[in-house]
Image 1 (cartoon, rainbow, N blue to C red):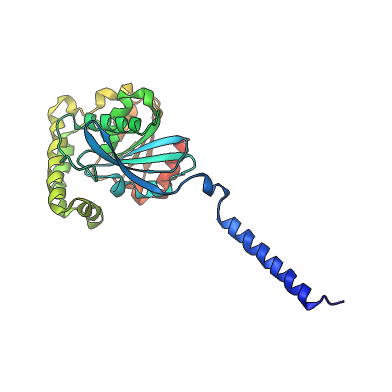
Image 2 (cartoon, rainbow, N blue to C red):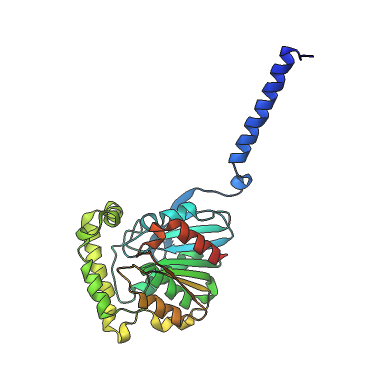
Amino acid sequence: MARPAGAAFWRLRHLFSHLSRSATLATVPRSMAAYSTAITSAKVEVNGIHLHYQQTGNGNHAVLLFPGMLGSGQTDFGPQLKNMNKEIFTVVAWDPRGYGKSIPPIRDFPLDFFERDAKDAVDLMQALKFRKFSLLGWSDGGITALIAAAKYPELICKMVVWGANATVTEEDVKIYNGIRDVSKWSEKTRKPLEEMYGYEYFSKIGSAWVDGISQFVQKSDGDICQRLLPHIKCPTLIIHGEKDPLVPRFHAEYIHKHIRGSRLHFMPEGKHNLHLRFAEEFNKMVEEFLV
């Protein structure tokens, strides 16, 4: 016997309401309310400098991101700030003094600028109340991370570095002088930095960086931090892009050889900015190593 039209209507309405509610619940993870996906931005005074940083996630594992030459969290780590697991990690990307939004002061390059950056970075995390944390360092930031891990071993959980070198050779100095003129950089690399600084400041500190990094070639064996590598105790992953035009392969191999128990991974198609070009693969590899 056919049901009354009114009963059929209310039954269909109830069914559609249930399906709609179920579809909504399926698209919003249960844990969404448990953590924040927002990226906050702030400054804190450290060692007499107001250092700028970005922070996202509220996982128990704190991770500090070290940018490369002239770089900042904003210019260098977009895919990591956006996509690293925010339930597991609290991600902090900082701007070293004279870079990004940590201006003033004007950036300079005394012989100890890497050690100065390492101290600033560690003191920043202490100011933010992180007792222990891991390090992700790219290029110059990789060098700074190596120094921080060696000098403050009790604070560091794990470390990932890529595009870093522990020494400067005559071959390296030729490469550095080849990039002194920032107007000749590719638009993709140049544009974010030029927008950040304006051309005049960008050009000035670009040239100053070449002079600053080249001065290490005058030291015994071109040492930046090679003497510190044996003091690194934390689990360390070294990643190297086999098509990196700025950092020859032997630098990654040297770091791997002198950090006990470290792992070395080569990315066949990776260049210097492998964490941006292959962000999904990079993030997955780093997250698996950190946990």
